[in-house]
Picture (spheres, rainbow, N blue to C red):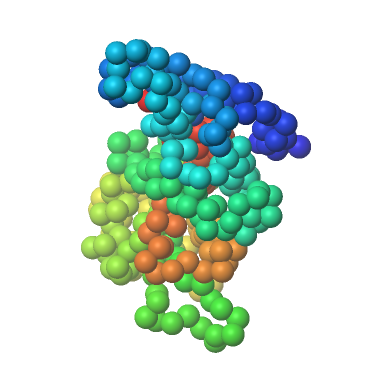
Length: 297
């Protein structure tokens, strides 16, 4: 059983106070809140009419908000959701286990649309992946680059509609396995489009492996050590061992995720890619990374 599954089991067993203590300890709920009228720290009190059973309350007698209740969710990720804190947390935990939205709905007593709202708020907090200030490369590391389509091929259709075509450039850092990945939607596959992106994300003097697409042909002119493989004849160059298998496996993961979602709308593909990269690059400790996104200040 994974650590996340163990946490989920513990969450299910918690009463409202235990859950609140857990959220405060993880810095997902404020441990202290000041009255918005008088600025004095409010008291945490039992409030049975609240869905959370607890609330903040100003106890300063001369304050205009004296004895007024304020939600414990104030200034947190959980604010303005009309479902239990436990359900929101379970949704996040199941998402951290890479469950799809239609799978999550089977494990919580909330609607699909509510799950969608929770996860949309979460994914909106995810930062864009950008390695300009910490470029891809390192000792014993090589870079592989390839393009892929983000379209979903429906069985009943013979092919993908050209009007719905979206290409992305994928760059992966490889040391035995992929250590970091970058991808971006591109308007075309021209050299003047692809090369500046590679220069932005990959450190000079890096070893870069690609196929023989003509747009990569001048990478050596940009202080890169460039190796190519001709896919027309072989997947791995027998003389140099150059291949693009790692980046192709990364491309396949993107396509698999699109397939699991039964396609991604054209207008949503940029946000999908941002989400996919965040999950991929933080997969070694995903729940910790997600909690960092929603921690209170």
